[in-house]
Image (tube, rainbow, N blue to C red; front, side, top):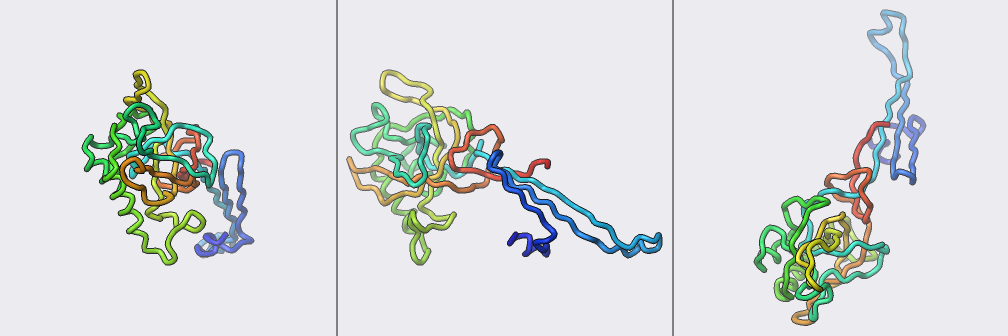
Length: 238
């Protein structure tokens, strides 16, 4: 209603229906419009209406993902999750939770963790895992993100802006190519968002932890896509 008012629509001219069944919002506007030229034909005014419906869906593609993967599960809002582990590896032999996005070098990983991978990742993509602890690049990248927080007071998990630099978007995955306890590649099932808890330590303590959050991001969505908390909106027919 606030946005309608900003666009010159008064509350009494609008009906807004919110549905939790299909995560939709439907807006119907009715207005009496005075005719100008129609008066020549004896028409004074007429009530006209317009309707639009938008739905919230899980993302099926995303640009800006962090080079990390988290296994599919029932995420709990506000709960702390390990997004990258330190030594010893917890996600399989040599696997600390990192993904190869756009290249295999540690500098590529660091850039992607700082700024987000600029390529597009889609549900169904097969992505190679990146072996190694990569402690230094991890610490530098997350430190850089925290240094970009110019908000006063700074963003926290209890009070943050939607564009807070501590928020990272991560592919939700399942193992694809494995051998014994080593995962060589994963399949993308969807996307989730996390608020990074703090700057990781070095060496064995090079861990990234983040709180699971729900937020909206630009990208492509589908009505059949599972919702992992990171959603987009699209207009549909009423």
